[in-house]
Image (cartoon, rainbow over the protein chains, first blue to last red):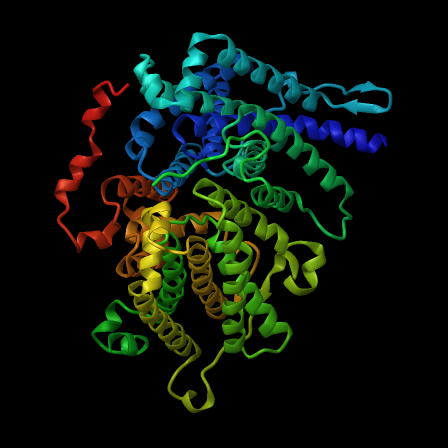
Amino acid sequence: MDLFLQQLIGGIASGSMFAILALGIVLIYRSTGTLNFAQGQMAMFSMFVAWSAMSTGMGFWPAVLLTLLSALAMGALVEWLIVRRVEGTSDLNSLIVAMGLFLIFDGLALYIWGPLPKSFGPFSFFSGGASCVGGVCIGRLNLGILVVSIVTTALLYLLFQCTRFGLALRATALNRLASRLVGIPVGRMLSTGWGLGTAVGAIAGILAAQSLGLDIRTMFFVVLFALAAAVLGGLDSPVGAVVGGLIIGVVKNLAGTYTPSSVGSIDLAVAFAVIVLVLMVRPNGIFGRPVRMRV
Amino acid sequence: MFLVAFPFLHEWPFFRMFLSEFRTFNATMFAVWLLVLLGMNLLTGYSGQVSFGHAALVLASAYLTAVLSQQYGFPLWGAIGLSGAATALVGWVTIGIPAVRLRGPYLAIATFGLMLAFPQILKLNVLTQWTQGALGIRGGVVGPPGFLGGVLDGRAWMYYVAMSVAVAMTVLFVNLTRSRTGRAFVALRDSEVGAEQMGVDVPRYKALAFGVSSLYAGIGGGLFFAVQGFVSPDSLGLIDSIFFLVAIVIGGLGSVLGSIVAALFLTFQSEAISALAGFVPGTNNLRNVFYGASLIAVIVLFPKGIAGFFQRPLWPKLREWNLGSLWSSRS
């Protein structure tokens, strides 16, 4: 039982990291209808920015702040310069553009920082002794990840639900034409959506690097779990992304624990199975809105 | 004529200057990629569905061919045909039919997941008995049948087999795309609801497009194993799937000529980049940036790719990048 609880908590912690990466994907999907397959590689790029900032002697938190601001600018710029060119044409075009972004950020990181892994964390906030309640412990790393994820989610919730700006963002996602008619600068909102999504992705990346280390491939597979989370929760639902992330984290951990070693590691296959299952049973996910088709 | 003579050209005085036996191998791989990319183009360029998992289908068929021929004693060519048929069936039934309900990004996510998960599945300990885990499977030496033994070496024989399969299946492809079925695919791509109104059985044709596309990927995968003589879980990965996409987009979506250009691109891209790196240092590392940028530029500027240049004038299209709109308020 203790093992189960232990794995459950570990799953929730890593799941919270998937959750905010998925949240980034959902924010971007809601803003321009682009499923950003480059989310992982863009997060990886931001992690390298943080690494560079720290290698000039900057402290951890200032470096994180700088990274978030640069990610915000980067995401907005990508929307403004590139995504807007294919907006409203077809799903196919926006997916191809997303893959183009994947290659661009992958290649840029390789060009600037080279193929060798970098040492990046765990930082003091994420290292230290475990905290135990009864026989169940949570490591400092997992605790740190959990805290950062909760704070991130809470801040985003406040932004979206309690500010005029958040209202404008939600309105744009819901109905672009009506938003324009009531005077919301729609273009700017779309760029902001991309910026926010990229910045949230950068946070997820920094969290992932604490346990996985930092190199070009760090986010390669993590993004699959985030995609599974986003699909499970519903691609256009931020609440769904968080719930989906937690479920995926727990399922992944439990599957890893209770699969006999004679089978081998199956975490990616589990994520794939979840995606297929959700798409067959409930394609809009737990919280998603059904999509209607028009000619 | 040129295709038939190709393996011998390097023995002629003139061609010896720039051809070597290695080029025969290149040309064989070109045939393999042509098959794979025709299939991918049918799916994406003609019927408008996206797959980021095509390399997984190729890999699956390569493995099936390897297991059938190396462990169950099937003749290699029979194993390739069987694997191609099996891949087509798998693509049609297990991906194509469920995919009927999935539109746009969902199909992309599912195939993306397949692509990332598949190498791990191949490495599962329970399958090691067949797949040999991470080690991969090595094939035997393939030689020409006895009566040709004195004329051709193994490499030239492989070239003839792969190239004739590729040519035959290209001809079939052209016929298919010009048939009623091919027009139904294109109608699907342009507007699903519109196609339905015109009496196209949308689910049936969507699944069929996936099936035919998988058949091409499957035959290509079987030949991939035969040509390379080796397959491992890491032979093909996500990046290859993405390169397939880059190739057909740059070559030209919805065009046979586009697929041929795409196969040329895929065959020679790494060599070309290496050669370029000789002049401009760092090009090797910038390769993906270059491809990503080309992908976006082609989609925005010339949605028909290189093949489109042969169909209509080019410069008017440049205006459509529409940089002016960057500065005007489009809020």
